[in-house]
Image: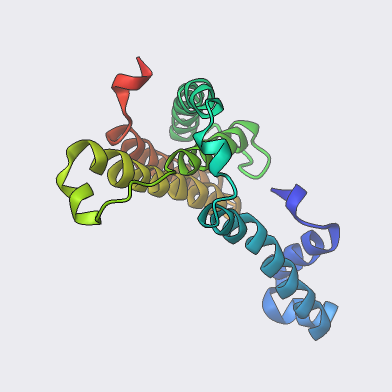
Length: 203
């Protein structure tokens, strides 16, 4: 996701990977560490905290309750899983065969990660409005438990496994070990996602 990183951040990220923390301090000074900290604080707040804050304040209520959500759910949240499964299976097969030579630049791996994250974001949006009942009541109800607990939690873990697998593989120079890492993490993700996919809504 280089588009979310300024050029100077990418430069010193490479320095950190090569020479570690001391290399960054030596080359950029302590002032640079402050810029690093502020950049990631602001970026991650916008990406991971602000959306949930806005949801909590009801900013998206009109959108969520509108008829457009039905169209979005049918068109995107139902269609994207097909592409995600194809990309995930393709990545697993290629990794098993040792065909992924450069995980950092591999387009299929990148598309797999992008589709997984898009599906996760759409899924989070579709969770709202959350039922105004006690969590114990949700756990007792099979349908509600699947929709609001089991399905989203397993999807979240699956996407995390995809993200970690791709991230780890980029740092491994040995192609065989890199492919093995992708194969393990992506296979676990596939199993987790498949176990809690509402197949009756896809077919």
